[in-house]
Image (spheres, rainbow, N blue to C red):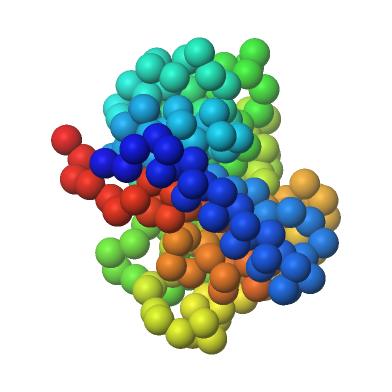
Amino acid sequence: MNAPGTVQFNLGQVWHQIHALESKYCRRTPVRLIGVGKTKSSTQIEAAIKSGLLDIAENYLQEALKKQTELSHLNPTWHFIGPIQSNKTARIAENFAWVHSVASIRIAERLNRQRPEFLGPLNTLIQVNISGEATKSGVSPESVMDLALAIQSLPNLRLRGLMAVPAHTDSLASQRKPFHALRELLENVQTVMNMSEINQLSMGMTLDMEAAIAEGSTMVRIGTAIFGARTKST
């Protein structure tokens, strides 16, 4: 497990990389750094938050709720990025500001129905299976528009954009292709729906961050580069 001081150093390095890539690719808007806390301790996450990290993402609901309780004295923005099961939608709707992994109308309707009104609409991204992998969650690119239109009609959800986890490749050129495709999908949604707030691309992790930023990512989800190699969830 990384010591808090190491987390602070790593976080500074990641921010430096992001700023350099923003400059390299002439990005006009800043990229939002989201720290992925999956399997990491509350101590590590607290160190990152106290070093200025504003956004924390979690894949597993029970692990996330435990950390939210342990870190209740802090005020990060919590993002849910894992697959969503029907029996978990109520707790997700009640405890997160952003959900990146909506992949069906049924799940969207449950989140909408279970979102407390006093919290305001839940920021929602559609997860797209951009590489067509049988083992990955997400809707097909062809189904994105139907789901986007369905979410738009739900008053307690606020559609903000798209998310994807492409198949792993090693070269920058090959990494850019699925991110480029996701950006084109977002542009199509923006054109059809004519809503300026649908402008978020949640794409890019530790090993493909440059490709994602080059193709217009607005949110990079970084775990390993901040907190160290993943450990098994218990």
